Amino acid sequence: MPTSLATLESWVDEVASRTRPEQVTWCDGSDDEYSQLVRQMLQSGDLSELNQDTYPNCYLHLSDPSDVARVEHLTFVCTDNADDAGPNNNWLSPADGHERIDALFDGCMQGRTMYVIPYCMGPIDSPYSRCGVEITDSPYVVVNMKLMTRMGAAALQRIEREGKFVKGLHSTGDLDPEKRLIMHFPDELSIKSIGSGYGGNALLGKKCHALRIASYQARAEGWLAEHMLIVGVENPQGETHYIACALPSACGKTNLAMLIPPASMPGWKIWTLGDDIAWLHLDDAGQLRAINPESGYFGVVPGTNEATNKNAYDMIRHDAIFTNVARTADNEPWWENKGVGEPVTDWQGRPYDKANGKAAHPNSRFTVAAGNNPSYSKLAEAPAGVPISAIVFGGRRKELAPLVYQARNWRHGVLVGAGVASETTSANIGEVGVVRRDPMAMKPFCGYNFADYWAHWLSFAGRTETLPGVFHVNWFRQDENGRFLWPGFGENLRVLKWILDRCNGRAEAVETAIGYLPRVEDLDIDGLDINRSDLETLTSINARQWQVEIEAIGEYLASYGDRLPAELRDELQIVADKLAHGSVNTADS
Ligand code: SAT
Ligand code: MN
Image 1 (cartoon, protein in one colour):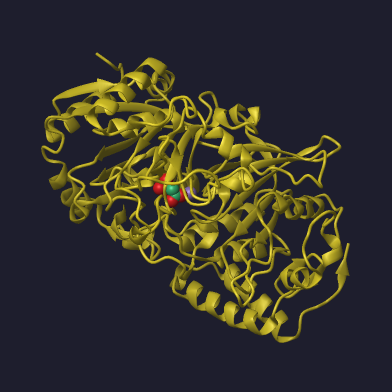
Image 2 (cartoon, protein in one colour):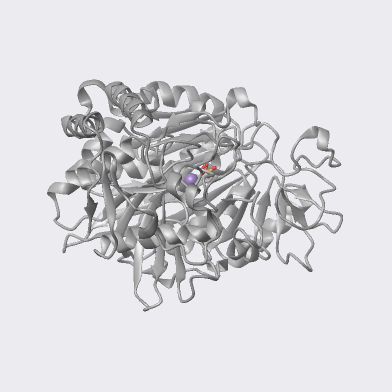
């Protein structure tokens, strides 16, 4: 018997009798198993080899052209009461949800192998970690789970000890977009996903478990599961402080988590803890601590080059799986803004022709184990996680939002997070570049009613005296000609420095209606090539535009009805009043 846990064994049997696979394989997470699956996929054509001299152990997977991103419109949260899922989720009752999706699972694995993948989200010996088991008929999912999570024998042992795990059932089905569904049953700690082999739809440990199910669990248990990178910033004196930062998908979380300090800031170092998800707990002393539940990265490829993110560029030169990139004549992977080489085959395997659009899909991805990252922090393995000094929210905004500002306090910070809006990206199927509300960058990922989620966030203020500072950033401000005002990438360290200096009482700011802003002279811009007027624009606000924005945030919040916490409404009124009475321009130290 592969497991001593009867509930696990009987669930696997039950799934097998519904899906009727040819065989069932329990995954042990070993390197041998990984190599064996890679060999098998090279034979079946699921993977192809890239140039093994220049990209050793790197492989390319081309997905079905209709299956290249998450599908929010086909993603459901199934709770007894529709209000518990909230207007931020598509809802079905658990009975209807099971009925609709189970019909698609009937016999779907015939002729295929069913893999059973025990995994642990978080360091294997951390009390903050949580386990799951994913059943899938996709060997591509197995190898990605091996790179992204702690999967295999050690996870199974923990699951058997605890007797509790999240059940994730996945099948690629027949990839028909009409028969694609991703369902969550938070009260049952279970996930069912069919019809997609892509990223967040199929690697169930990631968005489905570590965000949607975990956020629901976190609320009941008093912690937070967030769409945040975790980064350590070491100053020239050797002190390291940690920041957790929420940005929507494809807005540069991986780049920020792996930032390379500019040459004009010697002595600074960046340590990566995580690039996508943070689980945050208060410890006994009331300090907020973070772990990264993942152990690998599923990052956006286009735009990665030696100048923008040398760490990522180097990290994906070996032992990486590429999904939906193009290829060069030398059989190297190629993507837009790689900086070297020319595509000869596009992401659909066709001869490259400009007329067909981009060579690599804009949401093409790399998968690598976190250990490949030259700036990987060993503390990512620490069972107790790291203390968080600052929480940063952000979005992609052409206008309005300044480069950075600080919330007046935690309660205001929750409003800042709840009001986040961002232009949509290619990480979801749908229109790109439309501004939409994306509170805490969790719009696609919060497993319950946002109103309850904000109440949960607010409740932290009553639980400790020492909460982190809360900030908002926007790297994407443009002028009327579409030119970016801020250089971004490594230069973002200047903003992180101001943020941490604020938390440590070392930086000045001006109080405005929306919060504390740096003056140009409060930012360290030594050696930065940027003109003064761009900096002025980046560090100022337009009160009239903000009045319109605050009104829009008010309407958005009101759409949550009676469940909206009154504190949030009060906080919004404070900002509206400050805007109406002219911003207070007092220097603050
Ligand atoms: O496809 S994923 O959800 O894994 C990536 C993303 O959208 O952030
Ligand atoms: Mn993400």
